[in-house]
Image 1: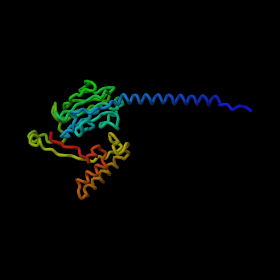
Image 2: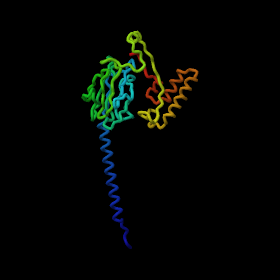
Image 3: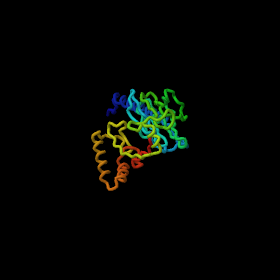
Image 4: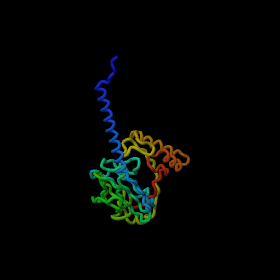
Length: 261
């Protein structure tokens, strides 16, 4: 009786399949190693503390135009990088490391510091690359760049250096500002993102697919729920805690205190 033999073509194809699987495994190991190198553990400095006034922000420039304002005044520190799970401010350029840099508020001096977290392609302060793991003081008006990204981040309202830049609509009369310098207001908000948002993800949803129109309708519905509640302030906090796409949801939408100037 003739013996059954595996056709030569089948044996060759199986070997090719095993070779492809070995190559894929090598690539997975390389990727894991790259991630290990790019994810340095950030040890929060002992001197870090939450600002008393949440007025500091980064003014984001692209091609000479202001495209965004990003708050850095509501937490003791902000992580910046490509990792949307770990970073507070996501930098999408491929040259940016997963955890690229940190901005830390000093609880005693009230000043802000920038730290390069051993990034591959650097952090630049006024076009000069800063050394890794060494905090650099951020003065008002200085420009930050990350790796090869074309975006520029101008530091505003940190309380030091070249003075503060008032946001549009603020009272620019010096006497009025001096008179009301000590006044402070507290702000809260509810954020509803859509798929066209700069970062279409949140703590509630990894990928946000709603349209701008759906987001606007959602905001309108939430607003009506607040206005119709017996206790609007309490209702606002409860709704923010459940529905807001901002990390401030854990604080019932609270963004902290703001003063003039």
